[in-house]
Amino acid sequence: MPRYEQLEEAKLTSEQRRIWNECKAGPRGSVPPPVHVWLKSPGLADHAHKLGAYVRFGTPYTPKQTEIAILVTARYWTAQFEWTAHVRLGLQAGLSQEQIDAIAARRTPEFDDPDDRLIYEFAHGYYQNHRLSDDIYERIRARWGDKGVVDLAGLIGYYSFVSVTLNVFEVPTPPGAKLLSDTPEH
Image (cartoon, rainbow, N blue to C red; front, side, top):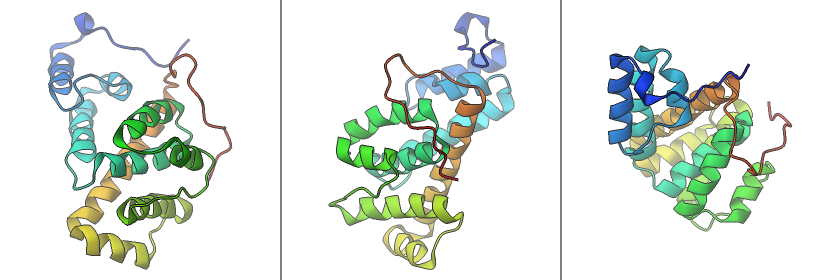
């Protein structure tokens, strides 16, 4: 039996419908698969979708920088659905296919923009060591302030939560999607 169930709007409880409608009215304009899972626990869904909207659309980071952090996170967790969804969004945000392929292969991509590189170094460095070096911490802080450090930690933490949700519930990828290799990083 499949673990993931795409919910039908007509069958939602009033609490689930409120969250569903808030999600659709927000910056995503839709109800993504993790929210379908979380709606089985409306209290969690209510908070999680709002946090997701903030870390994706409300931080000081550009869409490209946000996608770098999300793709590094999806690669770390080998979260297939998250990866395929954010490859498309990363390309739309200005990442090159070469940069995305490097992240998929666990190689360091080339970045012309030093801020893009710093976002990559933060996410990759954290996942490599489960700590952040003083150097990267201070460079992020110097560039974006304490708020920027908190927002970036929140961004990768939130997308770790999303990745775990998607993996636990085996959310299927679109037909024909290019999948990550299953070799775990950790």
